[in-house]
Amino acid sequence: MTLEYVGTRGKEKQVPNLVTFSQTILYPRAGLGGLFAPNEIPLIGERDIYSMATYSYEQLATVILKLFGVDIPDDVIQKSLLCYEKFDNPKNPVPVLKLDTNTFVSELWHGPTRAFKDIALQPFPYLLSHLAQKFNKKYVIAVATSGDTGPAALEGFSCLANTKIVCYYPLEGTSRVQAEQMQKSQGLNCKAFAVETDFDGLQRLLKDMLNSQAFNDDLSAIGYDLSVANSVNFGRIVFQVVYHFWTYLQMYKNGELRTGEKVDFIIPSGNFGNALGAFYAKMMGLPIGKIVLASNENNVLSDFVNRGMYDLRDRKLEKTISPAMDILISSNVERLLFHLFGSEKTFELMKNLEEKRFFQLDFSQMKVIQHIFSADFSTKDEIKSSIRNVFNEHNYLIDPHTATAFVVRQKLGLSDKHVILSTAEWTKFPETIAEIFECGSSFSEITKKLDVGLPLQIKNLQDMPVCHSEIIDSLEMREKLIGFLNE
Image 1: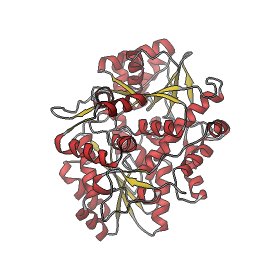
Image 2: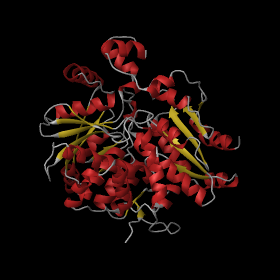
Image 3: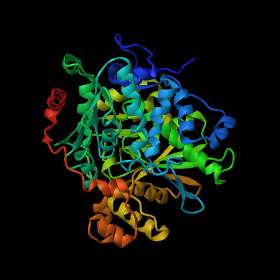
Image 4: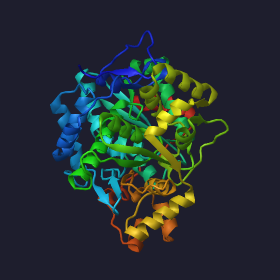
């Protein structure tokens, strides 16, 4: 029987109980304000897992997508996966680097915008565009970004038929390069706005737009339906499951893991989508040990794991040097709650979070979480020290998000075999790298001092013209989106 999708908070009368994958990516509005999640997690036997060690990335992705009930023709899926030819090494889009006997790094940033979001946001837009054309509809894709989703989504949707994309990013909440990537997006169907708010505010307003029937009616009146490219859309998450399998199987293929041997995955975590992908992979049968969450000073996730508490009372978002993780409301935690505790409990907890800015798991529920996850966080100074130390010890330059994983590894005393998921290339954060190594923040000064290369994508960015420079108030988001569609 084909896997289907269900709302995390239960069923509303006007919303179907079960929907297909295609329906979830076109209309990612589940009942009662929830998200869509698979009604069951597919299982893979041990023999089948290890037989996939010889698969190409595209073959592995095809298997995982089919297991998650992706109801799209095989030839369309194959065309969507051709996007990985734009990665640095098409035969190995996610290389795994060995730093020492027990430390491995899975580099998720070899795509066109140099961050892990490319892995999902290159193929996913092609699938959505295919469905839009199939049903003779036009879609506007709204995106709220803390730094990496925006550039990847704009790149992925650029010039795709039957789609327009509008990206919102916090005015002072991204790095210089992240902002430039959005401001210089060239697609005629692309628009980016800097908004005078933080990411949590953007994410809340985006969800309000998605759930507003009046706003959706306004869009319908001008011939558009609304979808999103944030990880509230499960079309993002399914592609994020794949690289966890690929990482483990590359280590196995290279003789670094024995059959059945577990390895911990340490994951820089903001909106929890990356960690949710690891959770699905583990539940499917991949021998992942602990999923270790690494946060920055916005450490709601480490509180959630260690204390069973999600507490936003008297809490203010901190701006840090790892801006893609400057998030207090990690939306994908809701899917985790659903799979572990069911829709009724998820509805109760999420309503408490929305209305009281707080929820508390009981002791037994907290132990379930801690059986799967462990967590800690990093300060700004710890992140800087980690970047400096890793470079000095291994001649390997990491970004401020990946650095949180190295810090947490040390704090938790992890000495068993582990893999760190590196979520972005250092080139996204030249200001921080320059500050740490006491040099100018231009790429020429950094590359000369540290003797590191610069990818072509970043070199080319410097000479591209700015196409999107408008700064707006958060209350203008809907108006500006409709204005763009009417251009």
